[in-house]
Length: 252
Image 1: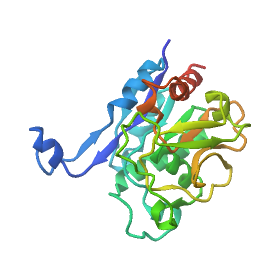
Image 2: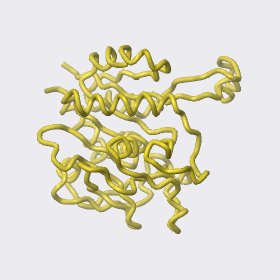
Image 3: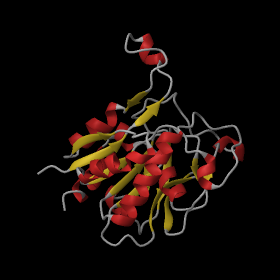
């Protein structure tokens, strides 16, 4: 039977884009998810289920009920993690901050990690969330380090825009079968100092951490990547392997 994969939703305050398309009201709040996540999970053999942001703090029970319905969690990309979440003062270079999403996902991540054995995959923001929630720090804006941008929208989303080197003793290496992988790139924040219990397992040419795993995962699937394999999976069998390995781990 196909496992049910919970995928975290984006939360947006400004409904002007949707309103311009003739949907809803200009100041309406929206929860949404890129179709690439849905499609890539389905093609990998899973049943995708969008996990909405439950704004009211007292409704954590609703979040936990949703968690009971899924076999694994994919923490999706999207808005920046609030620097206050990793003990920093904002440099003013973050994009929109969504406190409601941070609150729910930090709670959800910690609960899943500490109270369950459910597999977890983080993508882009998901990688940053994993590290910050475990006590690590984030780079707020990569160009501030004197490095070239990692937000590269001039490339089609499924095309390689740079390369990463992968630790040969990592789960990621076993999944993709190589120590060098072409990836896409749509981020300006990144993991800085790995949290206790987390190790870096992939790096870009300029030294930015591109993937993290648990130091001692046991049999648990726990992986987060800074790029977007869900965007590349349709045309790239190696990137699809990341989604397939995750979905397969949710069948146990």
